[in-house]
Image (cartoon, rainbow, N blue to C red; front, side, top):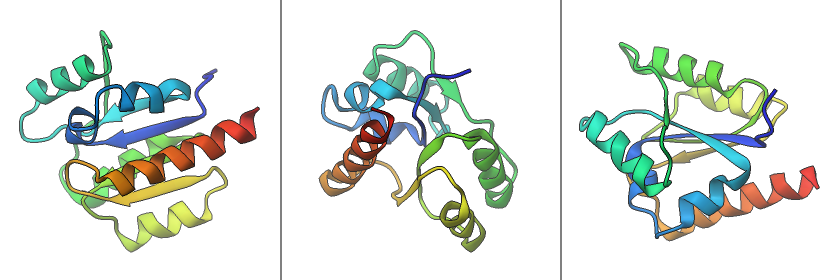
Length: 132
């Protein structure tokens, strides 16, 4: 049984380009799974260092975008989800709207803007408030 309130699924740049400490603080009550980018293991190492973690979960890669979305959906399980990706299919958006745990989809290819980081922070604050 997990004590996490949410899962974050994103590419490495979301965490490696964030201001120092942002990812660690934001993930205090959550867990992360990385969707590898073209840099592969090197970018995963960067994420681990940015989080000051000895290990980082990785979402398995799939042959096409639809299969990748299904894998992320399966990984979300019953936890709230923050999912950052370059885009989402209509099916993924419909799934996010219908599921009982809160879900935040952010369309971003790489680093998050300051406004997008604030959206994540508000989402996590709401989850933390509900859990209190």
